[in-house]
Length: 205
Image: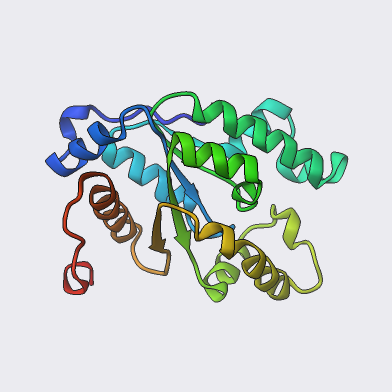
């Protein structure tokens, strides 16, 4: 299991406690391109909120007893997407948590509808050059096993951004300390859920 045991709720700030109270039993679901930082930011956000963290890709691998590259190679992308939708549907019913999803998960209409109904969605929006720099460090991206990874990223951005824009909250993912992104996630969640004043540019710089 990829679930991270949360810290004690007593460690939450008043702002964080208000967010968790306002969430009720809804998860916070992170969406966005590969390399946007969904798992890295998600773990830290879950820790800040004192909530469990789950990575949908890890849950898919556990359910299939195969790695995602192996699923793609053995069964193909459509099979993977069907399993991904089933796993995310199950995870959305599991109570409050922070859930990181794969880059293509939000493209499926039924998954978007489920997330809209049962969760708060947060898009980590990363520019193409940031994504390319980050994904070059890893060899486990089936969609990037092409002669032109940069072109593939550009195509995926063009295809996916219209759907990603349907998210409840958008956060710019860029090369700054992770805690800064997490601070912005917390502030944006509080604003969205609790009606707090949005931070000014000077407060977030």
